[in-house]
Image (cartoon, rainbow, N blue to C red):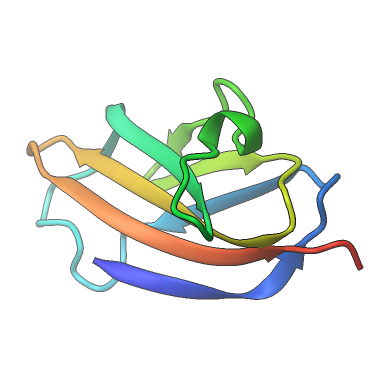
Length: 105
């Protein structure tokens, strides 16, 4: 649904946590919540190639409350898009995108 443009740069060797809180903006129905089963995260490079296995730390996807997050590692220079697909207890699948840049500073 939304697109967040990064104001930060991830350096290639950094390992950082990125996530999204689905609590705000009326994203969830009253009484609904994000669940881990059925949720996922993917990373795409500027050429729209899936680079998830190269950039997401294995088994790092987690949900705490209505916050979904992953750990990002490595990465080739350039712009990337991190897409969160958050499954809800009511059976909805919500999407949030985060655009960031990988650069050596």
